[in-house]
Length: 312
Image (cartoon, rainbow, N blue to C red; front, side, top):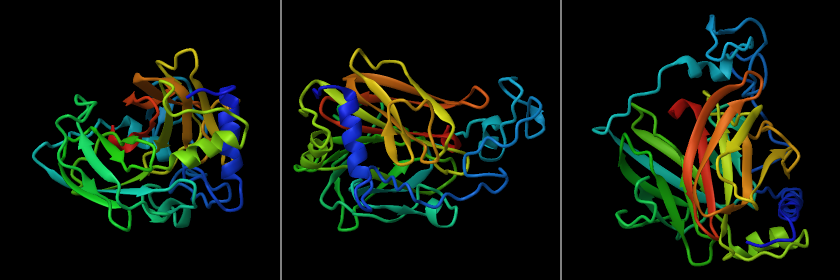
């Protein structure tokens, strides 16, 4: 992907996101954000500042700020995943240019539960292992139905990624991280879009873009212990190269100057060199690392990755 500057690409994305009621990557600036059950504020708030405690215990960083409410699970040990357990996984593929609606926006439920959207049928989806970046050992693809759904039965310790292909769509991958131990059902929302829409994002800002320029593009979604999109989180990447440009969404628009997520919990980077990248999320108010994700970036492709605190 070549441009006259990464800023142009991001501004183009913002133009589409703000046009009418259309949303880019599921972002709606006027959405409802539910309050956390015990956070005393919006979903993802770090809670009141005080002594160096986490729900009454010393904070892991000792920096004098409380990590509570939506982040209380940070003090719990990681779940033990069971390879003997089979989990029924449904991947739902949708067009991010059109509005989406989730349970998190309606009634404070999980942001991962998508209620409405513009579904993409006939997408070939394969679950792939982390040690199989080219999906050479992946099973036969499942084709999404008219509701954009592809269903799989996976082992409980699955921690790979999903490969998405349709001839008219930009190649895409989703790295959702670990499944949840002991939960026999999982629903995973995913996104894709046509090259025309992808190119129009840059064209609307006057950028010159190709899909075979040797770089890829990344979107990171951060979820707290309640599976709400999390504000107040910074993302650090270990390999952006000389052309990579990180950004955050601010009030529904991509922002190169922002330094942390807002209530949408979205960050990303454009013009990322092909290869393995690790993204690490840190709670800005305390300096506490809340999780990380490692993923492979492919040239001319979109890579989505989740940092989901519940599924460490």
